Image (tube, rainbow, N blue to C red; front, side, top):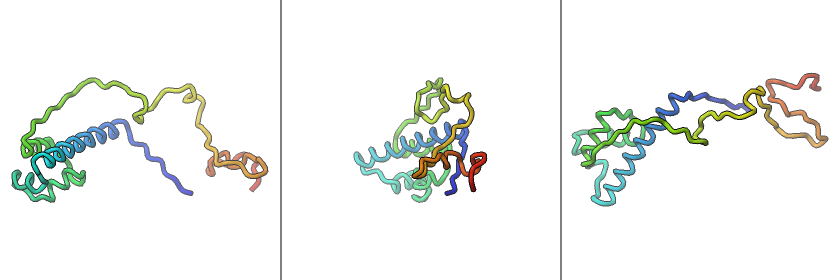
Amino acid sequence: MTSFQFDVGSRARKAGRFIGRVRSELLKALSERKAKEGLTQQALATKLGVHRSLVNRQLSGESNLTLRSLADLAWAMDMELNFELRERTATFGQNEGSTTSTISHGQIRFINGRNDAGSDKGLHPPSHPEPNAER
């Protein structure tokens, strides 16, 4: 079985999470306005003078959100934007590298399982067969 591992750097991860939170807030605000006032993507597009598909692409993530488009969407929803830049507080469990006592002990082996005879074949990744292993 082939598997791939991608390393998404801290910078890209943080940017992606921020953009995701912005889109989430936009969708939440639109949903609240829709429930309260019947506001639709079409109404937003009409107020902005653009096609509804552009608004849909921006909200779904298929199109980039610029600061200008974000401000325009907020204006069309009669809402005010608020941006805050503050020092980050580290929280365990947010896909950030944690320091453990095992980091300095080298690469961790994975276990595929044991065969019926209790042999430890399969305890090493296929690309690194155990020395003197029968083939």
